[in-house]
Amino acid sequence: MNESATASVAPRSAWRLPPRAAFFLQASLTVGFLAGAIAPTPLYPVYQTQWGFSALAATVIFGIYALAVLATLLLLGRLSDHLGRRPVLLAATAAQALSMVLFARADGLQGLLAARVLQGLAAGGALAAIGAGLLDIDRERGALANAVTPPLGTALGGLVSGLVVSLLPAPTHSVYLLFGALFVAQGVALLFMDETLAPRAGALASLRPRLGLSARTRAPMLRAAPAIVAAWAVAGLFAALGSSMVRAVLGAPSPLLAGLVVSVFAGSGAVAVVLLGKRDPPRMLTLGAGALLAGSLLVYAALPWHSASLLFVGSILSGVGFGAGFQGAARSVLTTAPPAERAAAVSMVLLIAYLAMGLPAVGAGYLLAHGTGLAGTMRVFAALVVGLAGLVLFGTRPAAGTEG
Image (cartoon, rainbow, N blue to C red; front, side, top):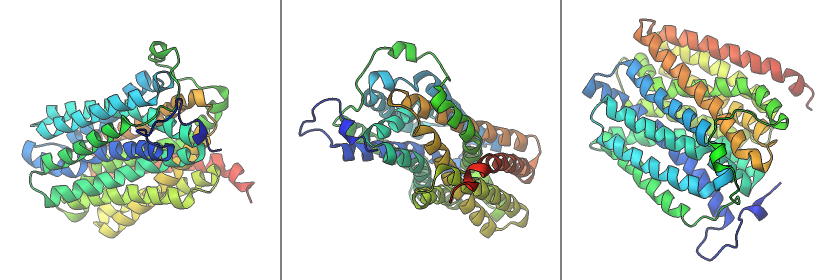
């Protein structure tokens, strides 16, 4: 069902973006926010050289971002259902631009952590509003965009950051100034976007954390949760430890290859969403779980064998699993939510996703810091993914088996 007829709550003047342009602008915000979130990953070897970072510190830098997103989703995830989408997005985009300035000015761990917290707060405030705003304009395409833009943004962020770090001077400044300019441009464009939801009372009450959903949306959410956890736990591992995996395989750090591994992982996810987007959610979940299982085992095998080929093939399969699994889960949940509950439903999906992304990444850093080693840490992680994937495959087997 196309909802573009209700995309604006007021007559649009000549100085306003048409619904199609507003749709792509909001999708570009998710791409930009996720690209900015992954931008520090190829820089971790640089930071470790300059400031003596440990693997645990790298995962904490990533994990604190995920926790900031979680906290903001709990507090502000439903705010755009009351204030409207545009005010929330304007504030979040301005905060994202400011976080890039903090990154560029950071001179140690504390500076990076402060920038990460602000970046997470901005992302948490915006992502639910973006997801709901896309559904406001076009329900079917919005569900597809909500699934394809996170891996696309991660892929672009890894690739752009890896290239900047390898080719441009002052890499710890250049990449953040580039993304900062993007966020400023997006903020200006938002000024010309129509609101897609009329403001309504209850904004202050919406700030009270609430995890409940209606019965109509709750059951699909429970069925989708294991797939969301598995997909985003793998994403968190690549984002936090991509540089460490490349170093273990090659025997030396390589910011460009670290960015490329993350880009290959996330880009494969985006391609999977596009190519498999017409399949029904149960089949998407089945395909995603199987690819996550196989990809995680190949990445684990690449470390003791020092095989770059296995690492990249495993990254591709893991990315396919991420894209297919998350799209199947998101579609099974978001398409059931009524308009007044869309931001809340998006918030719940993202809460599970970022919790799954942050905690395993920090846990992996803890294991590394206490002598488990990267191979042992990956063994624990692979066992977790295999268990979750098995749960998804078991849960979708009856539904998938009845399809023609």
